[in-house]
Amino acid sequence: MTTKSIRLDAELEEKIKSSEDNFSRFVNFLIKDHFRGNAWIPNMSIHDYAGISPKDLLERMKAVKYFRVRDNALCFTFYPSTQEELLVNKNLHAYANGSHNALHDRYIYFNVEYPVDFYFFLISHEWVVIEKVIESYLAFLFWHSDDNEKSIMERQVERTTFTNAIKLFNSEFQEINSLWLVFAENNDPIAKEKFSKAFFKKLIDLGIDPIIFPYVSEITHFLHHPFSFVDHISPKSRQFEVAVKSAYLRDVYDEKDDWQTIVMKGSSKDDLQRSESLEEPFRNWESKYRYYHSRPTTS
Image (cartoon, rainbow, N blue to C red; front, side, top):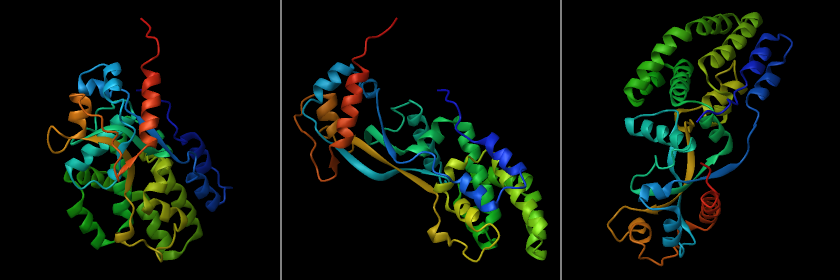
């Protein structure tokens, strides 16, 4: 899927080049909330996973009025510690870009609710770019951490991702680190201005899309307190993850579970009203799925 990027590179470049811009105004521009709220993205190809037609799927699910819902079981992380977390990242990206059966495991996902701004971030970039964004953010985080935190990162972050992030740190952050040291040692306003411009230029060059800033607390914090570590965020309060809500049928235990009885066998009249269930994601999925698959096909 090819989608026009929503990154603001041209405008950001112009902002960086302009010496007349007030720094706080520039920060507000970077973290402006361009896209608000959340949006359900329904699975339009769930019948393919079941191996049946859309018509048969709707027929077998005609008694269903609710979906089971989990609020934060699926998370996109900018601080991956395992290959499994990287796979979830990749699958959330794939789902957002139309591969709607990419997420299934023991839960069969019919609808996924993304923050709208983050959804646009995912559909605006190929996966290889997303990987680079994660590594670039970790390189920034490494630069922004003290020696103890650097050691913690080395132990926690998935090995290949950490190695790539350190390569970026060594190749890309030395110049701005030198500017930072000049400012920190001399409290030099000229060095401060040079550092701020070089820092944001570096974020843009690395592909760190401003739209992710609200989801990574270090960058957000740094934007508001760029020249003081007095309010440095403690590791426990750091924000690395974007949680998405998911609506699903369960396929965990045995052939008597939701997916098996309702969809695969078509033998259940269960409406799926449970303590964890919601009606909204089902209505959202059913209406859009029914409309999508009732459209006349073109040859």
